[in-house]
Length: 251
Length: 161
Image (cartoon, rainbow over all chains, first blue to last red; front, side, top):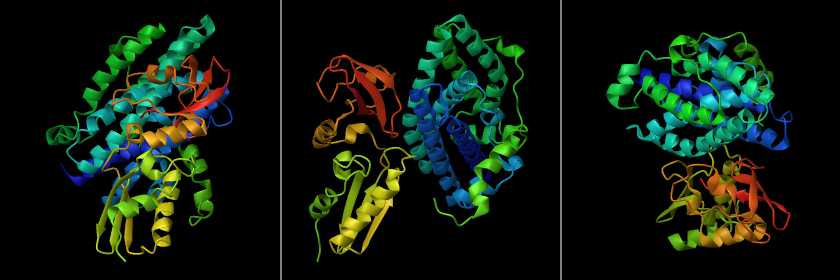
């Protein structure tokens, strides 16, 4: 496997974490209740810290330093899936996005914890313990709200229906899929997707939410190759405002 | 002068967690290795949570305490070679957490399947397990929020991870 392939993998993970971390942070001070305000803020802090771990690995592979990479690229240079860049919307969507994304991320880190590249395996092993709490948090609230009154249930169902095609975009195949599988880095996106469908199915069933026939859904691809929605660039501009004002600022 | 590994360990006992100032980094389990080669001392550390902002402070506090004891030929490394787990917190450390008002993390041996493990954390005020988990996230990344149905106090717990 080439270094280019490894960078491609690390970039998509790091960018997903950074962008979703930023979106999660938008709930700081705005949460529907104090505990959720704190939960989304904590998950934001976790995710931005996790992205840093991957940008550090990329830096060791010769990429620029983490701040430069995080704050100076344009939207088309980002490899995150479109799911994570969508506006936070209302709490139902943020919660469903967090549920769908973190279930996938947990499986990804479980697989990468066994990766033959030691530095990657160490980070993945560490992060799966942290992401497990994100998954448990999502499961609790998805079940609780979906089993609450009719309005809550229908909001959760609509959020799920809207998010699913984007969520399938998490698993957009990389051009290096076969290289990863052959080198034993991890079992590839298709394998994560299969496991993910099983895992979310179990929780959604308890929540009484319906999954559509997967064949009827068209995955929203493009993010992994730099094709993004209109929402990413404004997010990046906001995120890098201080950095652009004074790149030497320390905070 | 040359110090032994045990000397260094006792110096590091002086360094406390900046967010929980009752527990030393040694008892917290983040000091994963000390090597003494002649006058050169290497201290290896592992982060509790990867996004924990206190890690940089811990690292510079370790450097400071080494300097204070005249050890200037040193390297302090923060890496993930050893994965931190709350099971690495010493029993002395767990006592200190409880005294501080934080329920210590239960031993989990790497089996955390669902939130049940912290659903009924033991209240550090009255030792009751008739408690309710309010949120798996608290004021810092390593803490969860609870309510004690017995004494009526709200309390925080150090999360098992």
